Image (cartoon, rainbow, N blue to C red; front, side, top):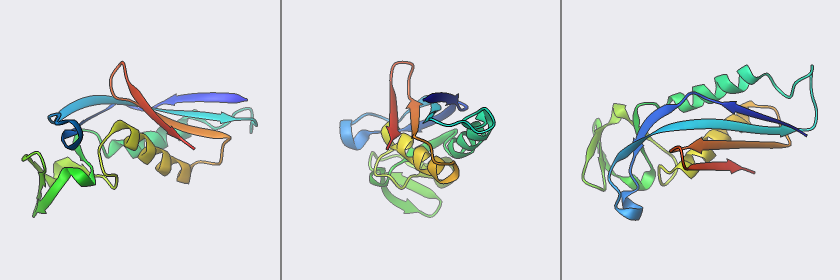
Length: 142
């Protein structure tokens, strides 16, 4: 079995898990990684690293220097302003309104995985891991 590990660009974003733990808005420098396992090579490789890296960076670019908000983080949207449950407001242009309920690392990994799997060939295993800090990461695969 061949195994690839492809690192994307670090992206900086903020989020809050105030509905879960009362934690304030804070930021991370997230580091996304794609792990691929496959049993066959085509032209001596599983896939060109550059293809995966480009796709990964395109997908995660939407998060860079944004406030990540899950569905349950948003109280209401007033024009160009997003009002959150923890009584802070964010300009809509500075926020990414996620389809997921919360802006947690596990759900970011799942979101990136879902987007990648639509654009990449089928492998034995595809996994997306996102490091939130130097000590903790979350990953998603099927």
